[in-house]
Length: 487
Image 1 (cartoon, rainbow, N blue to C red):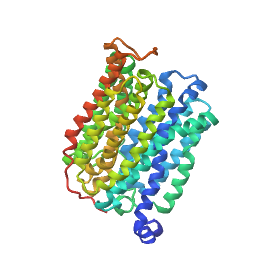
Image 2 (image 1 turned 60 degrees about the horizontal axis):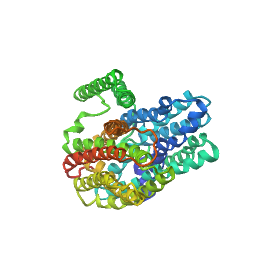
Image 3 (image 1 turned 135 degrees about the horizontal axis):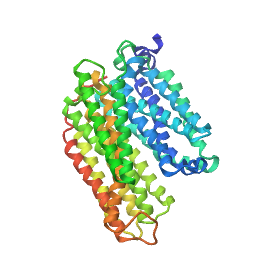
Image 4 (image 1 turned 45 degrees about the vertical axis):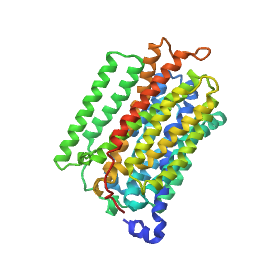
């Protein structure tokens, strides 16, 4: 390892500001990875037309990315220990950029799907890295501020991305969506070469002598995720034996994954998910909150636009008008709450956020069918303020109780569980909504005028999301641990 690439040398060269430059470096790449996950949705209609895709095949543009991202998160600690921060991060950025270029030039849908999987693998590796850096490079009294500033930038990517993506698709076609990540990746590669050290977490030298990747665990986790996603989709579309078999296979695969990780942990192996993490009550409860929060967040991103268009008959332009201001408020809230996270207990901040999020879902039931826009904006903003309380505080509250060597594993596992919750959230909301629509004698087929029965079905689905948030508050109250992770 070059002396100029070591952590002590970089700290000496750039002084106290170095940790912020390091955070900026990984922030740009994380924004690119998050943007690649959401922006492609605006290109699906044009892509479906060009490749003559049915709804089920088109869905794999998103679900293929999601499965790859969720599974690859588990490999980040092993990659960091073996190759160090710079090689791992830069390798993920090269893969993300390659996926973007390949997808943009793809001549058939198989290549598009392969490009999306490559982008998902890269995004999964990158996303746990900022939390590891914040807990290792920043002092406990400034970790909340760093998390808030980082989160403010990251949440703006999915807020602004679809709007820019829509303009690109209209002006240059769907291929431009894939190329959009290229400048972000090039910038992140330059920043990584300048500011990201070659060392592994903790400042140790990265070594390839630490053991093999847990391929058995990775296969079990991937199979479980794949079966869960497909089982939920099948349950949503065609409830029956196939859905039951897929969900049973998911349970079996995840059960095997947990058994194998416990065996690896007890035997001194290198598990993808070190089960010693869950000996910390704060961390275990943080994972519960993260899973439920992921379900509610991803479920609501599906439910809100459908509600506004199908139940209230608002145009797509109105939906964007309502949701973009809420995302901007979220970014500002995160910056403010990040500072509070350095002084206030995580249990208080996360519980407050969950309560506000639950209130926003419950208050959706009060939106009048006539002139609903002002109320929708108000309750959407209230929900995003709640998210702004949760996001900077949850990871810190869960992981500050961990011993330093377990921080990379902790960041990887809590992100994995959040994404697993999110992967089920969309299908769960769809299933509950269709159940309640059927109970009221309704469907999602277009109809003239606002239906009281259809509104009731959506209101009951929002109530389910509110109940999930209230359930998560009970776990959030256990996020009480003295900080033990330092610089």
